[in-house]
Image (cartoon, rainbow, N blue to C red; front, side, top):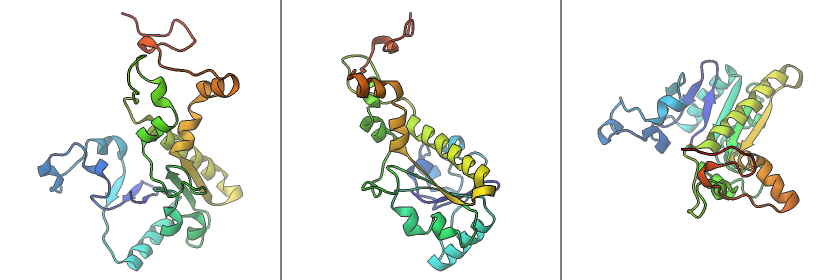
Amino acid sequence: MKPVLRSSGSARVEEATASCRLLTGTTPKAVSSAEAASAPGPACHRAHHSATRTRPRDEGRALFHELVKKSDVVWNNLRGSQPAKMGLTFDDLKGVKPDIICTHISAYGRDNDRADWPGYDYLMQAECGFLSVTGEPGTPPARFGLSMIDFMTGVVAALGCVSALLARPQQGGRDVDVSLFDVALHQLTYPGTWYLNHGIETGRVARSAHPYNTPVQLYK
């Protein structure tokens, strides 16, 4: 994964082959073509201005800082240990722009013993118990049909980012940290509290029924 910088108009800067997602759904011929367009690309990057850069380290950093000066937010999606190493935190960039908002999405956060761990949506669904409540009784663990942890984490990060922007006139710039694991764990909601408070284990229910409310299920 590579850092993503978004400014007015939203700019995305990374290597052309930085993420397998950028090539998902393309044909072998299209992958080698300047016309290559991935299946998720239009869904995830609509209205973004994309560019690839291969420059010496010092020159690339100077270019990045010029973009920061014109931006409200620097946004990255990396392992938690990487933003500080790459100079993407508020402490690193406040000298370039004092009120910059630095938003970080990682697997497990930046301030714990898992900071260097990578992560992925389906891994979080498994680790936080989503697979244990999805599917029909007696069947193997099942994931969501969509990458919901990724999507929810993006929305939570956007909420945190907008909140920081609204508070910026009074409080200045800052870091905003959101992790896939925290968002997934938070979304356990009532099954999580039922287990913690009463020891109730919520499992799979036939025909996608709600575990306690009725009538909520699939009918023929």
